Amino acid sequence: MNSRPVRRFFVETWGCQMNELDSQRMAGQLMQLGILPVREPREADLILLNSCSVRERAEQKVYSRLGAYRRLRRERDEPLFIGLCGCVAQQEGERALARVPDLDFVLGPARVGELREVLARRLAGERVVATGFPRDRRFDLDAVARDGAHKGMVTVIEGCDKRCTFCIVPSTRGPERCRPLAEILAEVRHLLAYGFAEIELLGQTVNHWRDPERGLDFADLLDAVAELPGVRRLRFVTSYPRDFTPRMVERLGRHRNICPYLHLPVQSGSDAVLRRMGRGYDVASYLELAAAVRAARPGIAISTDFIAGFPGETEAEFEETLALVERVRFDAIFAFCYSPRPGTAALRLGSEVPGAVAEARLQRLLRLQDGIQRELNEGRVGAVEEVVVTGWGREPGWLAGRTPCHRIVHFPAGATPARPGEIVTLRLERALAHSLLGSEPLPSGASAPVPAAAVPGPRSTLHP
Image (tube, rainbow, N blue to C red):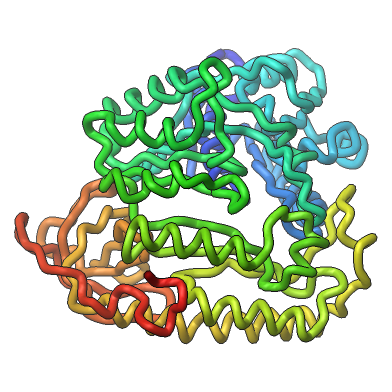
């Protein structure tokens, strides 16, 4: 490989944790070939754009970025290879090669394990499109460059069969495919041996996992992973409300190393909108599930997703979303204006909401959440928490980390800064809307109870 014109690579990653893990998988394969990562695209001989297609205008953004890389290619004397990867790659396929005549290859998310072969074919002169969803997908544990030192990510289920009317994921990541329990446990043990103390299980609908060999469900998977020696923290994302069972909820309280944090997308507070979205649950069942989760694990942080301005959404339906936010008092929300995506049914089910109206609704939703979130963060001031260090903060001499309930904490590094992945103990001293400020790390063994105000109080009708 050393005789070939590829010695350095750069990966630009857009989107979710699954894309992050796909980028780590691609980086690992290249490093096994002796191709090393660089921090800047202009230093690379190979650039991979790992794309996301969830939001509107994803294709335009991808082609604009590819244009910038093509201009970079014209500025240099040495060869520069460019590959389009990820969900837009799956969506565009052959069209990408036709639209960008000097694009070298297109690699869909289900074919990430084939990067080495795709690159070899390109170096032999072939422009390659590797998309689609093969029955047997390659996953080499030794070919993953785990660059997130604080967290080891493990895909347990790929694709999605839900067909929500706004979502393009079934088209870009394919049908559901569950990895066997034995294979998942082998990867987790591999990560523990590597030194990770925090494990995150990934899937578009992670709690719909079923063992293809033994028929076990997600509750059994949580048991198996949580009980492995060395798992200090266990997270999972993203859960689908309809797929939770009482056994799964009970596991949140049974295993104390399962982090007290759950991302539970609701998308809307209106039953009528949820029906048009094809979500398969109503507000009442979502509230029952949230109450059950909080009963099983008092003090658990719940975050969610919302779409503002879904086709046909009336002002009254949007007000129902605001009412849900006030009732549940989420610890965090991720909210966006509706984006039409190719091949989805949403626009056929209701009239388009004007962009200005959707944006105004989104800002009202975010303002409401900001107030709630700041109050919840203020309730944690004074607590002593174990924080996993994620890296340096924005200010010189400060580090950033995450509490078990996934809140961001910024804190002074002290005389001997902790390394990413280390877990330090510190006192939470000040609340901001989206994060907290902490003290310098405390001596080992320091502890204090979380203040009672840290748990949502009477204003939350869901708290048991």
